[in-house]
Amino acid sequence: MLGLRLDMATRRCQRTLTRKPITRRFRKEMSSVDESIFNVANMDANGLKVLSEDLREMPTSVTTSSVVPLAYWKSLQFGAVLFLRYSEDENGTMVPAVTRGVFRRHGENWKPLDYWAGSGWTHDLITNPDSIAELGGRAICDSGGSFTDKPNPEAPAIVIAGRHSPEVNVLSVTQTGSKTNAPVNGRWGAWIICLDQWAPYAIEAIDENGVVIGQIQGPHRLPSRERAK
Image (cartoon, rainbow, N blue to C red):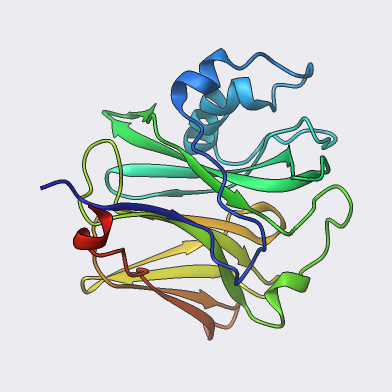
């Protein structure tokens, strides 16, 4: 039986609807829209570089043509990179959105997978880079993700992203009795996490004193198979 897959954008950290998937074929066919290496055509290459070398290289300036890697996560089988990009809304205004790029471990390297998804993003890096208004005083919030109860070599069970406050130093993920702690690595408070298994999880935001100051629990409930038929 096929598993259910859900790509969703919550309204806890953003207000626009989920974007259509950005397939690997589209990323390959998309021509460069500017001279920067930070564009749609180079998302695969930049994601691979982030997973191998960290977020060391960033564009000197960000425009609405830029596609900027914001954060990353590595699980046992998969890696995920969060990209900021801009697209036109229904009024023709360029607004921020994010794409969740997914990769699979391939020996000591990484392989970009075909199905990537995205959602809206209220943090506009161009007009208000220091804003944390969407957090509403919280330490952490999520902006949506991709979920499937039948993970496979082409899709992890859970890919979720959002933002955290400047006070957060560590993200801790607990699932099936196992805990993973990782220093925050995102730019401008962005974060992304991918999980191999479909099981309840808790993401804790921890400050410099080791105190848990925020938490997110999941996963979101998937539509029933009867409704999905």
